[in-house]
Length: 284
Image 1 (cartoon, rainbow, N blue to C red):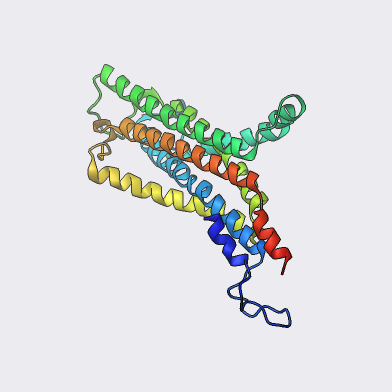
Image 2 (image 1 turned 30 degrees about the horizontal axis):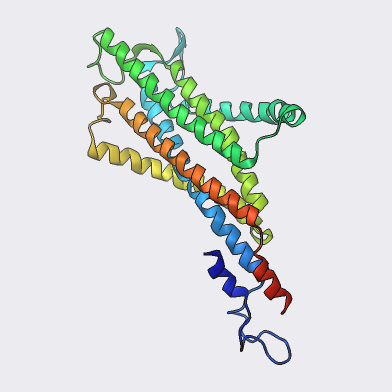
Protein backbone atom coordinates (compact mmCIF):
# COMPACT_ATOMS: atom_id res chain seq x y z
CA UNK A 1 0.00 0.00 0.00
CA UNK A 2 2.86 2.37 0.79
CA UNK A 3 4.19 2.14 -2.76
CA UNK A 4 0.71 2.99 -4.02
CA UNK A 5 0.51 6.06 -1.77
CA UNK A 6 3.94 7.18 -2.96
CA UNK A 7 2.44 7.87 -6.38
CA UNK A 8 0.67 10.90 -4.92
CA UNK A 9 4.06 12.61 -4.53
CA UNK A 10 5.44 11.71 -7.96
CA UNK A 11 5.43 14.31 -10.71
CA UNK A 12 4.15 13.36 -14.14
CA UNK A 13 3.80 15.37 -17.32
CA UNK A 14 1.22 18.10 -16.94
CA UNK A 15 1.47 18.43 -13.16
CA UNK A 16 3.63 21.57 -13.36
CA UNK A 17 3.33 24.87 -15.25
CA UNK A 18 6.30 26.03 -17.32
CA UNK A 19 6.82 28.69 -14.65
CA UNK A 20 7.41 25.98 -12.04
CA UNK A 21 4.12 26.34 -10.13
CA UNK A 22 1.87 23.35 -9.49
CA UNK A 23 -0.81 22.97 -12.13
CA UNK A 24 -2.90 20.38 -10.27
CA UNK A 25 -2.56 20.97 -6.51
CA UNK A 26 -5.47 18.59 -5.80
CA UNK A 27 -3.52 15.76 -7.48
CA UNK A 28 0.09 16.36 -6.45
CA UNK A 29 1.04 15.99 -2.77
CA UNK A 30 4.22 16.70 -0.88
CA UNK A 31 6.29 13.96 0.74
CA UNK A 32 5.18 15.25 4.14
CA UNK A 33 1.51 14.78 3.25
CA UNK A 34 2.16 11.25 2.03
CA UNK A 35 4.18 10.29 5.10
CA UNK A 36 1.57 11.81 7.43
CA UNK A 37 -1.12 9.67 5.81
CA UNK A 38 1.09 6.59 6.12
CA UNK A 39 1.55 7.31 9.82
CA UNK A 40 -2.19 7.57 10.42
CA UNK A 41 -2.87 4.37 8.48
CA UNK A 42 -0.18 2.51 10.44
CA UNK A 43 -1.58 3.69 13.79
CA UNK A 44 -5.19 2.85 12.88
CA UNK A 45 -4.88 -0.92 13.60
CA UNK A 46 -3.36 -0.20 17.03
CA UNK A 47 -6.20 2.22 17.67
CA UNK A 48 -8.80 -0.40 16.72
CA UNK A 49 -7.24 -2.92 19.13
CA UNK A 50 -8.28 -0.68 22.03
CA UNK A 51 -12.02 -0.90 21.34
CA UNK A 52 -12.51 -4.33 22.87
CA UNK A 53 -10.34 -3.30 25.81
CA UNK A 54 -12.79 -0.52 26.68
CA UNK A 55 -15.69 -2.86 25.94
CA UNK A 56 -14.50 -5.40 28.50
CA UNK A 57 -14.10 -2.64 31.10
CA UNK A 58 -17.66 -1.49 30.46
CA UNK A 59 -19.01 -5.05 30.74
CA UNK A 60 -17.16 -5.59 34.01
CA UNK A 61 -18.39 -2.27 35.42
CA UNK A 62 -22.00 -3.19 34.64
CA UNK A 63 -21.91 -6.79 35.85
CA UNK A 64 -19.97 -6.02 39.03
CA UNK A 65 -22.97 -3.97 40.17
CA UNK A 66 -25.20 -7.04 39.77
CA UNK A 67 -22.68 -9.16 41.65
CA UNK A 68 -22.41 -6.63 44.47
CA UNK A 69 -26.20 -6.61 44.87
CA UNK A 70 -26.10 -10.38 45.39
CA UNK A 71 -23.25 -10.33 47.93
CA UNK A 72 -22.62 -9.07 51.45
CA UNK A 73 -21.61 -5.42 51.07
CA UNK A 74 -21.32 -4.62 54.78
CA UNK A 75 -18.03 -3.27 56.11
CA UNK A 76 -19.47 -2.92 59.60
CA UNK A 77 -22.85 -3.86 60.96
CA UNK A 78 -24.50 -0.55 60.07
CA UNK A 79 -22.67 0.43 56.89
CA UNK A 80 -22.85 -1.20 53.47
CA UNK A 81 -21.01 -0.08 50.35
CA UNK A 82 -23.50 1.00 47.65
CA UNK A 83 -23.45 -1.50 44.80
CA UNK A 84 -23.05 1.22 42.19
CA UNK A 85 -19.90 2.49 43.90
CA UNK A 86 -17.77 -0.58 43.26
CA UNK A 87 -16.53 0.77 39.93
CA UNK A 88 -14.75 3.42 42.00
CA UNK A 89 -12.19 0.77 42.91
CA UNK A 90 -11.12 0.66 39.25
CA UNK A 91 -10.56 4.42 39.27
CA UNK A 92 -8.75 4.33 42.61
CA UNK A 93 -6.51 1.55 41.37
CA UNK A 94 -5.67 3.54 38.23
CA UNK A 95 -4.92 6.71 40.17
CA UNK A 96 -2.73 5.00 42.76
CA UNK A 97 -0.94 2.93 40.12
CA UNK A 98 -0.18 6.01 38.03
CA UNK A 99 1.49 7.67 41.02
CA UNK A 100 3.58 4.59 41.78
CA UNK A 101 4.55 4.10 38.14
CA UNK A 102 5.54 7.71 37.52
CA UNK A 103 7.30 8.33 40.83
CA UNK A 104 8.85 4.96 41.66
CA UNK A 105 8.74 2.20 39.07
CA UNK A 106 9.61 4.10 35.87
CA UNK A 107 12.45 6.10 37.51
CA UNK A 108 13.84 2.85 38.96
CA UNK A 109 13.66 1.15 35.56
CA UNK A 110 15.31 4.15 33.92
CA UNK A 111 18.18 4.09 36.42
CA UNK A 112 18.79 0.35 36.71
CA UNK A 113 16.98 -1.46 33.91
CA UNK A 114 15.16 -0.13 30.87
CA UNK A 115 11.97 1.90 30.83
CA UNK A 116 9.15 0.09 28.98
CA UNK A 117 8.39 1.53 25.58
CA UNK A 118 4.95 2.91 24.80
CA UNK A 119 4.04 -0.24 22.86
CA UNK A 120 5.20 -2.41 25.76
CA UNK A 121 3.02 -0.41 28.16
CA UNK A 122 0.05 -0.97 25.88
CA UNK A 123 0.81 -4.69 25.84
CA UNK A 124 1.02 -4.81 29.65
CA UNK A 125 -2.33 -3.06 29.80
CA UNK A 126 -3.87 -5.68 27.52
CA UNK A 127 -2.45 -8.52 29.64
CA UNK A 128 -3.75 -7.05 32.90
CA UNK A 129 -7.16 -6.43 31.37
CA UNK A 130 -7.42 -10.08 30.33
CA UNK A 131 -6.23 -11.14 33.80
CA UNK A 132 -8.93 -8.97 35.36
CA UNK A 133 -11.61 -10.72 33.30
CA UNK A 134 -10.30 -14.11 34.43
CA UNK A 135 -10.30 -12.92 38.06
CA UNK A 136 -13.91 -11.73 37.71
CA UNK A 137 -14.89 -15.15 36.34
CA UNK A 138 -13.18 -16.92 39.25
CA UNK A 139 -14.85 -14.65 41.82
CA UNK A 140 -18.26 -15.32 40.29
CA UNK A 141 -17.56 -19.06 40.22
CA UNK A 142 -16.62 -18.86 43.90
CA UNK A 143 -19.82 -16.94 44.66
CA UNK A 144 -21.93 -19.63 42.99
CA UNK A 145 -20.02 -22.35 44.85
CA UNK A 146 -20.76 -20.63 48.18
CA UNK A 147 -24.44 -20.39 47.30
CA UNK A 148 -24.57 -24.09 46.38
CA UNK A 149 -22.75 -25.16 49.53
CA UNK A 150 -25.32 -23.29 51.64
CA UNK A 151 -28.27 -24.46 49.54
CA UNK A 152 -29.07 -20.87 48.52
CA UNK A 153 -28.66 -21.07 44.76
CA UNK A 154 -32.34 -20.21 44.24
CA UNK A 155 -32.48 -17.18 46.57
CA UNK A 156 -33.49 -13.84 45.01
CA UNK A 157 -30.66 -11.75 43.59
CA UNK A 158 -31.33 -8.93 46.05
CA UNK A 159 -30.70 -11.27 49.00
CA UNK A 160 -27.08 -11.12 50.19
CA UNK A 161 -25.07 -14.29 49.71
CA UNK A 162 -22.76 -15.30 52.59
CA UNK A 163 -19.72 -13.93 50.76
CA UNK A 164 -18.12 -10.51 51.09
CA UNK A 165 -18.47 -8.19 48.11
CA UNK A 166 -14.89 -7.06 48.74
CA UNK A 167 -13.86 -10.07 46.66
CA UNK A 168 -14.84 -7.90 43.69
CA UNK A 169 -12.09 -5.41 44.50
CA UNK A 170 -9.29 -7.65 43.17
CA UNK A 171 -10.52 -7.97 39.55
CA UNK A 172 -11.56 -4.33 39.49
CA UNK A 173 -8.13 -3.30 40.77
CA UNK A 174 -6.39 -5.43 38.14
CA UNK A 175 -8.33 -3.72 35.38
CA UNK A 176 -7.54 -0.34 36.93
CA UNK A 177 -3.85 -1.23 37.01
CA UNK A 178 -4.05 -2.21 33.36
CA UNK A 179 -5.55 1.17 32.51
CA UNK A 180 -2.65 2.88 34.33
CA UNK A 181 -0.37 1.27 31.75
CA UNK A 182 -2.62 1.39 28.71
CA UNK A 183 -4.26 4.82 28.78
CA UNK A 184 -1.11 6.98 29.25
CA UNK A 185 0.74 4.75 26.79
CA UNK A 186 -2.01 5.22 24.25
CA UNK A 187 -2.05 9.00 24.68
CA UNK A 188 1.74 9.17 24.50
CA UNK A 189 1.96 7.00 21.38
CA UNK A 190 -0.67 8.95 19.47
CA UNK A 191 0.69 12.33 20.52
CA UNK A 192 4.23 11.27 19.66
CA UNK A 193 3.53 9.80 16.23
CA UNK A 194 0.53 11.74 14.93
CA UNK A 195 1.40 14.49 12.42
CA UNK A 196 1.91 17.93 13.96
CA UNK A 197 -1.31 19.25 12.45
CA UNK A 198 -3.29 16.44 14.12
CA UNK A 199 -1.94 16.56 17.69
CA UNK A 200 -5.36 17.51 19.07
CA UNK A 201 -6.91 14.67 17.09
CA UNK A 202 -4.57 12.29 18.93
CA UNK A 203 -6.25 13.15 22.23
CA UNK A 204 -9.70 12.87 20.66
CA UNK A 205 -8.81 9.40 19.34
CA UNK A 206 -8.39 8.13 22.91
CA UNK A 207 -11.72 9.64 23.97
CA UNK A 208 -13.40 8.02 20.96
CA UNK A 209 -12.02 4.60 21.95
CA UNK A 210 -13.42 4.93 25.48
CA UNK A 211 -16.82 6.19 24.36
CA UNK A 212 -17.33 3.65 21.59
CA UNK A 213 -15.98 0.84 23.75
CA UNK A 214 -18.48 1.50 26.53
CA UNK A 215 -21.25 1.81 23.97
CA UNK A 216 -20.26 -1.59 22.58
CA UNK A 217 -20.36 -3.03 26.11
CA UNK A 218 -24.11 -2.35 26.28
CA UNK A 219 -24.52 -4.12 22.94
CA UNK A 220 -22.54 -7.12 24.24
CA UNK A 221 -24.69 -7.39 27.38
CA UNK A 222 -27.87 -7.09 25.31
CA UNK A 223 -26.63 -9.74 22.86
CA UNK A 224 -25.82 -12.15 25.69
CA UNK A 225 -29.27 -11.64 27.21
CA UNK A 226 -30.98 -12.28 23.88
CA UNK A 227 -28.98 -15.31 22.78
CA UNK A 228 -28.23 -17.13 26.07
CA UNK A 229 -29.70 -17.75 29.51
CA UNK A 230 -26.58 -16.52 31.29
CA UNK A 231 -28.09 -13.20 32.41
CA UNK A 232 -31.63 -13.72 33.71
CA UNK A 233 -33.27 -11.24 36.06
CA UNK A 234 -32.03 -13.34 38.97
CA UNK A 235 -28.29 -13.76 38.37
CA UNK A 236 -28.20 -16.57 40.93
CA UNK A 237 -30.15 -18.63 38.40
CA UNK A 238 -27.84 -17.62 35.54
CA UNK A 239 -24.21 -18.12 34.59
CA UNK A 240 -22.55 -14.76 35.02
CA UNK A 241 -19.20 -16.51 35.19
CA UNK A 242 -19.65 -17.67 31.59
CA UNK A 243 -19.99 -14.04 30.49
CA UNK A 244 -16.65 -13.25 32.12
CA UNK A 245 -15.03 -16.32 30.58
CA UNK A 246 -16.32 -15.20 27.21
CA UNK A 247 -14.81 -11.74 27.74
CA UNK A 248 -11.55 -13.39 28.84
CA UNK A 249 -11.34 -15.24 25.53
CA UNK A 250 -12.27 -12.09 23.61
CA UNK A 251 -9.61 -10.00 25.35
CA UNK A 252 -7.03 -12.76 24.85
CA UNK A 253 -7.75 -12.87 21.11
CA UNK A 254 -7.68 -9.09 21.05
CA UNK A 255 -4.25 -9.19 22.71
CA UNK A 256 -3.04 -11.46 19.91
CA UNK A 257 -4.43 -8.99 17.39
CA UNK A 258 -2.62 -6.18 19.21
CA UNK A 259 0.69 -8.07 19.05
CA UNK A 260 0.32 -8.47 15.29
CA UNK A 261 -0.53 -4.78 14.87
CA UNK A 262 2.35 -3.73 17.13
CA UNK A 263 4.80 -5.88 15.17
CA UNK A 264 3.66 -4.41 11.86
CA UNK A 265 3.75 -0.90 13.27
CA UNK A 266 7.28 -1.39 14.62
CA UNK A 267 8.51 -2.64 11.26
CA UNK A 268 6.90 0.27 9.43
CA UNK A 269 8.46 2.75 11.87
CA UNK A 270 11.92 1.32 11.21
CA UNK A 271 11.47 1.65 7.46
CA UNK A 272 11.22 5.44 7.68
CA UNK A 273 10.52 7.62 4.68
CA UNK A 274 10.87 5.92 1.33
CA UNK A 275 14.05 7.06 -0.40
CA UNK A 276 12.41 6.89 -3.82
CA UNK A 277 9.87 9.50 -2.79
CA UNK A 278 12.56 11.74 -1.31
CA UNK A 279 14.50 11.66 -4.56
CA UNK A 280 11.44 12.55 -6.58
CA UNK A 281 10.58 15.36 -4.17
CA UNK A 282 14.09 16.76 -4.33
CA UNK A 283 13.79 17.04 -8.10
CA UNK A 284 10.69 19.24 -7.92
